[in-house]
Amino acid sequence: MPRYYATRNTAMTDPTLLVLASLADGDKHGYAIMADVREFAGLSLGPGTLYGAITRLESRGFIKALAAGDRRQPYRLTAAGKAHLQAQLEKLEPVVRVGTRRLRQA
Image: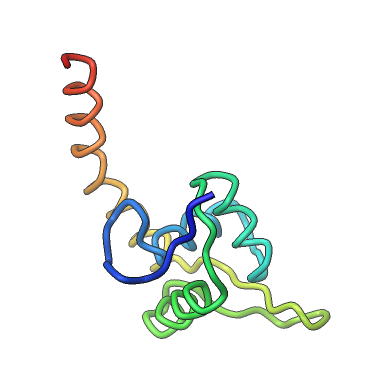
């Protein structure tokens, strides 16, 4: 399985976008986010990459930390995070559409 290290901020594998997409269906702690991303994107986020993305997203107000019931810290997508995710997905849609069409024609 490919492992993602934050060397470039590319839209398709941007760890912040992957975290937002993971949180779009509900609150999760770090390990659950990593497992979800591995399942839906086929990428393994390292802890440094994951928590770096979480820190950036929290500082921008896109996610918020919730009260922890145990040692695991859950995170929730905010309204601003939902709006940002939607905007990013809308930007990706033309790329996916054109790429898919071109592959069919090739």
